[in-house]
Length: 459
Image 1 (cartoon, rainbow, N blue to C red):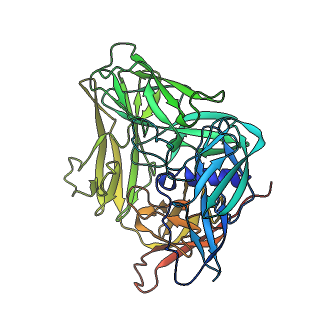
Image 2: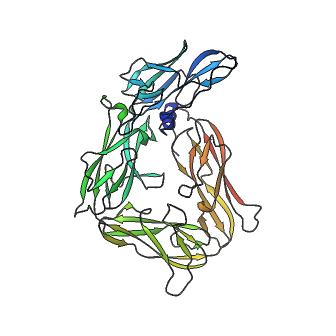
Image 3: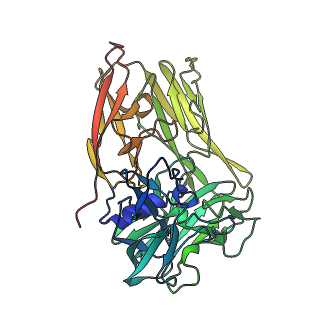
């Protein structure tokens, strides 16, 4: 599990989720006989009345201001506070006048910080409202490195490119790019800070979405040897400054020569009622490279022996590579993908489905630590034990709950089931419970738990 060393990184993770940058929460009306007594600035990590903070060049974060009333109430006045900076060449602050990066239109909300250049000398950000004021002193650091990663569309788990700084994709395929920054020696996904483009656009080869980094290759643009483009990630927050950063990755759209297919459970039987994923990779002639699992078309057909249909693909919307066993028997599984006008087929995999009795479940990891508010995603895995001695991953038969969603949440969505992410800025502990129906006793489901601790690591 990725951990972070200081609260500045936590703030960065929180605010790169983007929503808070575009519209900070509203405020309660003044009145009801209460009078304001002071204004406080709250840090990016949610710390009330923060004195210091840390920002990182090119990566926006944000502040809120609260007014404390004589009845003890503290009310968010982010939309009414006026912000100022002691050094706009290092750190700007929005008063609703910081433009969103092109091609978006509009402005960031008040209190959004734009770190322009590194500064060891603290930059003072001041909030004022109705005669009250409060300040916070920021140092501005610089990420030590950036890495471009890919992730399969429809999932949230990223992986390094097969070749750093370069990638190959097939015609008519999609790839989704992320950027990982190393901040004070620790990694954090900084996707929302990036705008993507091709240095020399060529829509006959591929197009790229500026906001998401999703690249779609043209259906037939793949001459022998491939055609190369340069995908560029830039950071509008520090454009024109000495710390401005761009990341270039070479994209080659090349023809495939073959497809490979790998079943999730290898040669083990598939228990009736369970699902099994299949991974399809495209081979460009020198080994499997591009993951096409969610872009291929799968089929499950009964052998010629006349066995009944026992498998069904696309049981979950958007997850075309999952086979669900409906009844005992045997099916032949294959996948196809059309590249540059040529339909490629995988070798056939034979899957045996059988009835078995679930006797218990386990969850992994059994304990983990997370950074409060971090956007890092941790997959949880539920494994079922069966009477025959077989063990099988059964995430999609499980239902996940959290004892404290302000600490951690787990997805029950078909596409991302079992993926854990922190619930917010709060520190503390949450118990995650996975439940699976017990076929022997409907009133006593099988359960397994993991403990999640959200805390700022000791420096």
